[in-house]
Length: 484
Image (cartoon, rainbow, N blue to C red; front, side, top):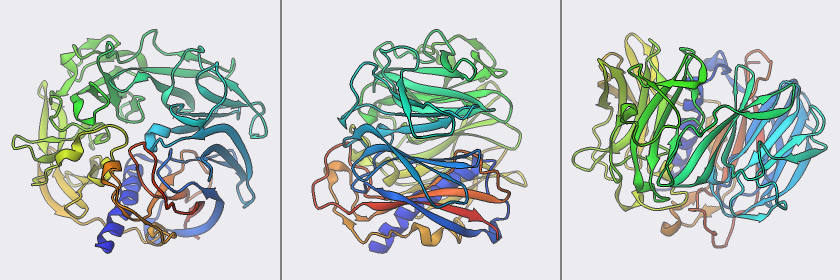
């Protein structure tokens, strides 16, 4: 049983790296000869539960790590590449018991080298005074973490839930949800590097739940820039904070690369904000309770740059399945990738961070050549599996076991010997500590080199206090990976 728990935990990392490699352009060139070249300790961090995911960013010969420290204070570390000495800046923001995306933090560097840091505000132990409401800081000097000024993005009344910075062709964007789960709107800004101000891309939200629902979009909430030069959106609606009220998987794409002009997959123009009444955008009209899950969706492209939506829902017998959908012949062609007999059960329902990744996982489709696609799938009753798909029909052709990446294997074994106590009410599985490898969102400018951040923690906790005993803080560490 212990061996299975360790295997399941390691798969979390394998999936994360698989997703990264499927869309990254900065991966190591020769995987067969790849090894760990160097490791640099950053600092001890809180390990009791999975607070907001740390961020690693390498740019202009400098490396930054944004994280919550061993007391859960928002912190940024900076070093020069080639040095193991870090400088630190701690912000007066202390996270409470929020888990994962519910404690999201984000970091970015603009064209002139100013450092931008933001995080989720909900349920903090310690927080800055208001106004302004958003927790957003920008460095006073380029490439320096010595001093920051606290700002708002556009106005003082913003509620910036799930704040996320995104780069597209060196342009810096920002997205957030204004409002709560089941009744929030998604907003999008772009940054003017010369005037050093943020501007709204649209006069209205991109999604409008009319106070009755909110949208959960793939890619951190921001449209995904595809290989066809368009922006693409894949989202589902959700009526309340209960995970089971997800419904109505939908898709839209930009006309060219203009974020103000949109159309359906059939090429019919649509004007934001998108609402539940835009039935022309439906991919799958699954109702509440039908199995849609906001973390379980992916948007990717086949070898002909055709968008493929991947997601989970229940089949006609109420069994969990992974589906792939592609727009063909004026409609969405939906094909199951799995033939599971796995039933999700009562853990599909509930609020807070529900540890979905401990139940079901899916990856995007990846072109594999010879008219085939591959896709990683898993549920808690089977081993991780690569599904081989026929590219034209999307039908499954067979299954393969994932090939281990040798340099990752020793890093995925927990260093802490603490065993997490199973707590069903908190959806905590119990067993060994979890390990995640987080990819670099920047560019190291070193040929054949990538950086990863190793993070060890006790897992999700449904945003509630975890009873003692607690594990000791664990070391946050950067790994340099490449060929010697």
